[in-house]
Image (cartoon, rainbow, N blue to C red; front, top):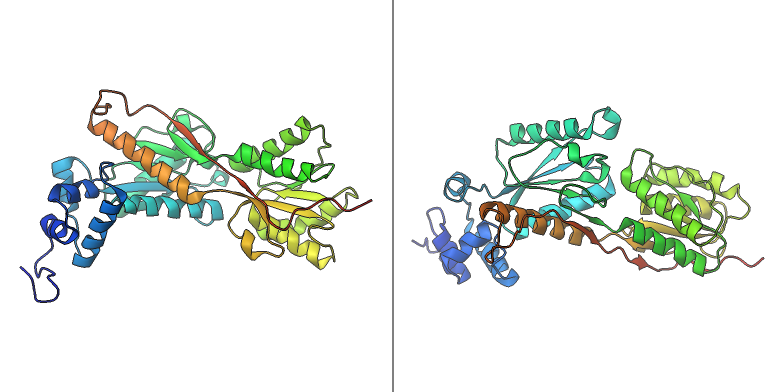
Length: 358
């Protein structure tokens, strides 16, 4: 029954009301609510807009009883304050919402807490359920700092890792190694004899992967390998790195393992009267602030939005596989472990150029 204000029902809106406004069947609305892959993106968007217009609130308890699902996904991370993790979390939340799922967040202990990955995950897992009072249909775990994901405790729902390293669990990550190789080779091809490095914290697995790729690329090209300067992901550590880098008279190019440290280094170089890239070329990783720096930063792009979409795609594949006994309509397995890497292209801007003339 309408209330005279554009057909919005005076009672709580039902799936049939949503279907009528969206111009689809109630079955289509149900598929959207349950994250089915059998709904076209344009149709899903119409349904979601109709839900918003009607103020439709799904009955989670009823849906769980009927379909065995709760319409909610759990996301557990190590540190929500760090740029890369925060961007990935937002991408996962957005991708889940597009599929009609809510997301609840939990935090596991950081590596410095002195606990193993299994213990940290279990604490985050139990804390998430205790705080929300909700059950979830599956988990996305920020696994980038989990050294031994095989030690994670078993959970009764599907789980995927946000991780660039292959392992025993389904995972999706950034092509770290190839991205760094492109960055270093770009500088070598410009004529630099070597490339210095501002590294990330020793406790970080992704920082270690980027550092190893930098090292191996120099070795493969027969270039001198300078001593890397340690950083902590923050811009201040990049700023402090300038003194140690400039102590090497052969310094002409620097790869920073993230954009924030590159920004700090560039600030320090400007203060010392050095020109970028005429005196020193600087390249970063992530592409989160590169357009706002001066000069504009050459950097490796980490496609957080695509990583988030792929994580949700893989998680829903596992959820649907569990619902169907692990097989698709043709009888093929849909629950096998996969490891996907999202491409990490080098975005060449203004901060990289040939070395200064001798």
